[in-house]
Image 1 (cartoon, rainbow, N blue to C red):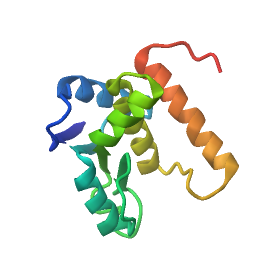
Image 2: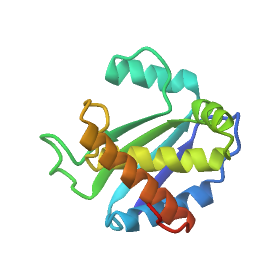
Image 3: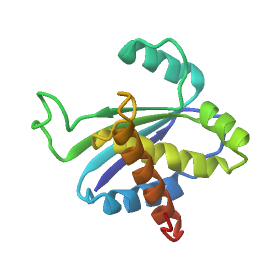
Amino acid sequence: MAIAIRNQQKKVKIDLRQIRRRVQKLLRLVDCREKEISLLFVDDEEIQEINQRYLGRNYPTNVISFSLSEGEFSSVNPDVLGDIVISVDTASRDAERGNIPVSDELDFLIIHGLLHILGYNHENNNPEETACMQKKEQELFFLLHGYPLDF
């Protein structure tokens, strides 16, 4: 299991060791323990540039994921899942609005990005797919943090 993590933002201190441990646990939980993934933590300015360049959306967002296990070249290296890019600026604002720790918001965004890489979708206006992804997000978050699954 290879996990590449890079922090390119300076505003919020991130515990990269803790993130690595949590990503390892998440990869085990989704039965991808031997797969590779990369995480990039950036500010709003950088994620807006990425969002514009690759998705044609000229605004910052909280997370963008790039699956390398889909499409015509997915067989080139099937052990590489993809890349997750997270804006720590947006995550911090969202955490403050939700009155939760930034680390919990980052965990949620990592889960969200990972599920997109694994083929989950909520952006196609299909209520069943959206509900399925939301349930899986909650399940993984609870398992990651050791909470009972009571839903």
